[in-house]
Amino acid sequence: MMPKSILAIQGASSEVVQELLSSCARDWTAAGARVVGVIETRCPRSNLRSLRDLRTGTDYVTEQDLGPGSTACRLIADGIMDACASVQRQILAGCDIVILSKFGKLEAKRTGLVAAFTAAVETETPVLTAVSPTFVEQWSRFAGNLAAYAPPSLIPLNAWWAGFRRPDDGVAEAAQEISMQKQRTQQRFPIVQASATH
Image (cartoon, rainbow, N blue to C red):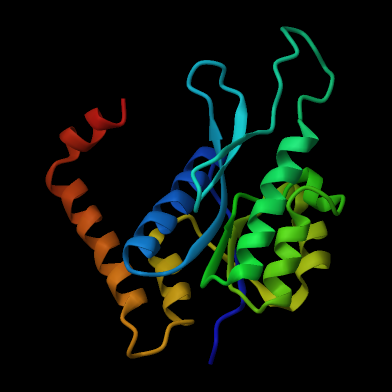
């Protein structure tokens, strides 16, 4: 039985979720999968958000600094639309898996990355994403019975992805082995790993 075509991570902070998405993108790409999509990143200096294209490495700025005390919307629509258009083109050109940073406020209003979600569904390409509890109702209306939820852990994410792979292609198994090797390294050298993140 095939898994649901869309998997949404829940139960962790945005930073944790984006790191999980990034890890999946790296591991699955290293294992030979054609991964496209965007993840959310922050500029180290300004702390402003951007969307990073997983295939090209391009950063699309999605937030502007309006100064202290400002209550105006900080989102930059052009950056989000450009990122979405890039992912759409890559989906239509052919890929194995689409990773999209989240279904959030804009997507709930049927804008933001919605066109990329739609392109993936129309081409029957699996999608890994995240959904804030705030927008679960809108997400359910949008994704319907195509989607399932997962906790913030690489184990269920790799298991879901393995369900789409042919038994003889070895991509999912290779990705899972890469993830397991990373986990074993972190367990053996926790101090080194912790230092490397600071």
